[in-house]
Length: 328
Image 1 (tube, rainbow, N blue to C red):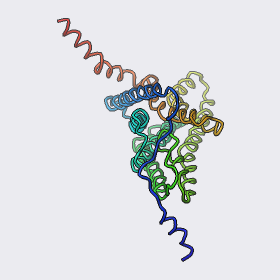
Image 2 (spheres, rainbow, N blue to C red; image 1 turned 30 degrees about the horizontal axis):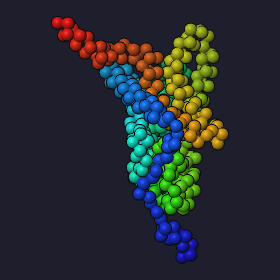
Image 3 (cartoon, rainbow, N blue to C red; image 1 turned 135 degrees about the vertical axis):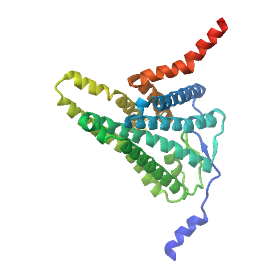
Image 4 (cartoon, helix red, strand yellow; image 1 turned 60 degrees about the vertical axis):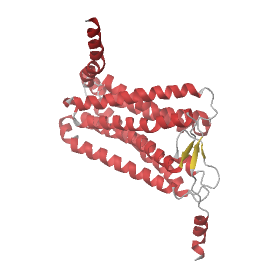
């Protein structure tokens, strides 16, 4: 019975706070300009990702396995932007620093799920490029709608399971001291460090999640491009080699935009000021959803005719039509 005494003591003093206080941007000078920037980024991200999804739905030629992954990336970017930016603006622009306990965990779930899915979606797109260049004659056998849907479904289920596990471990923590989260959102790492009781399982999963959703995808992508580079080195014709590389341009751009800021921030470690770290991580969360649709709409040849048509129907035609009526 004595073996379980510590358990009963912890349960008897268990404290679940009514709210957490988000203090990430509090006290930083001239932050109103940053909030304007975030609002601008949010609007452009929403419009850009909706445009990518609309183009893929409208053009039957784009309903290929590759663009299933592109559509999913646009959806994840849209969901992530809608989950993060409006809440951040509400917290810091309208001084709603007190976030209810359950709302905070929900906020954490959507942010972590979308950020993790962005990385895994880049793995799915990398698989497409790897098969296209290494096995061009068998591409349509190795990259099918069934394979791509199965891969993306597995990624969604895996991410949701891991994030729910992290949140479940948070609910067993007792907060008898501070409830102030020094971040711009309900960050898992900042929350579990505030606990009074044993938080070792949370410590483990806080280090496991970056390995699963940051370092492992990066290793897979880098290994795949090493294989791609080796395959292209065997190609004699420089023109064919350049053509194959051009098909990887969009994906490589997405990888650089997503991983480089995170790697720089984590590599600098304690050498970076806490406020600078918060700003860098917030930019890492909002910039990829802004640039991903721009990269695909501009760099992918398949997109150009369709999105020109969408712009004409949605923007130019109403303007020209209005102008003609006025002239009449």
